[in-house]
Length: 311
Ligand code: SF4
Image (cartoon, rainbow, N blue to C red; front, side, top):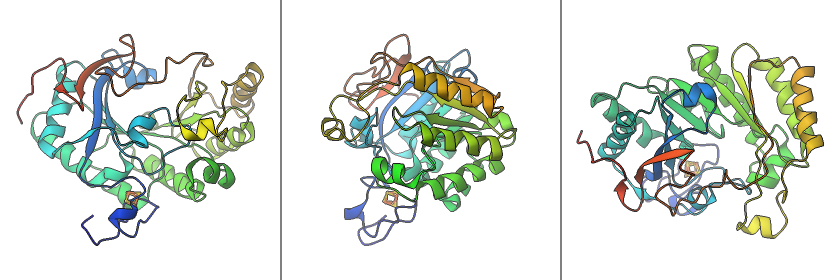
């Protein structure tokens, strides 16, 4: 987006850069890259998943666990060469894939970066890990660089989407985006639809699971995420606008019971969350615990455990 142009990358359709909801779709900013073990088994594999955390966000959930980078845009600008070097660093450290986290607002720069990395001997698959608040036209440009999709389906309830993301049109776009991803993926093993259960909003979860059973069963796996952790320091939490507690046992059992009732067998679910182990701190070289991830690149100091490999 230049000084005067509107941006049409995502459904927000911002009229000018100064009003960019995501903070700006270019240049590409990254916060961290690490070999991560906390993803679903087929994503983590044996070697871990090479997560690349993009700064900024076009959805900015009020309860985001990565608020430092999504709301606050913590991170720094990288060009296509540095992006490619980061991907190669992850590959060299045993990552089984490159897992681009929340890059919906930066699709053109990411496509260019992946192409640069492919030209410089990146051979592992690339994953698109997004909120699904995306336009199908934009997703088309990922077709020849992305091998697997990990979209969220956060809610199909307009009022929930408005309350937590100021995006009442989220259900409309997310539904179309996920259908598009399932069309673009070469097999059902290449799409995992994630849903985070929100304490106190179980009816929203029921709608999502019913949608999955009707539209995605046999075409994707489901990942039911039950580790909602109340973030400490977001204004929305202090104001009491987002759930301030973990999921309780009744809610957890109810959500799991619906999986059985709806015949959803292909997928994953977690143990209920009880601590802060899922809350990262992107000020640290390793934003996660050492059991969960090995840092490879960080916005403050660049490469952490490897020298830069030129591309
Ligand atoms: S990508 Fe960013 S600037 Fe572009 S429309 Fe979406 S929120 Fe607005």
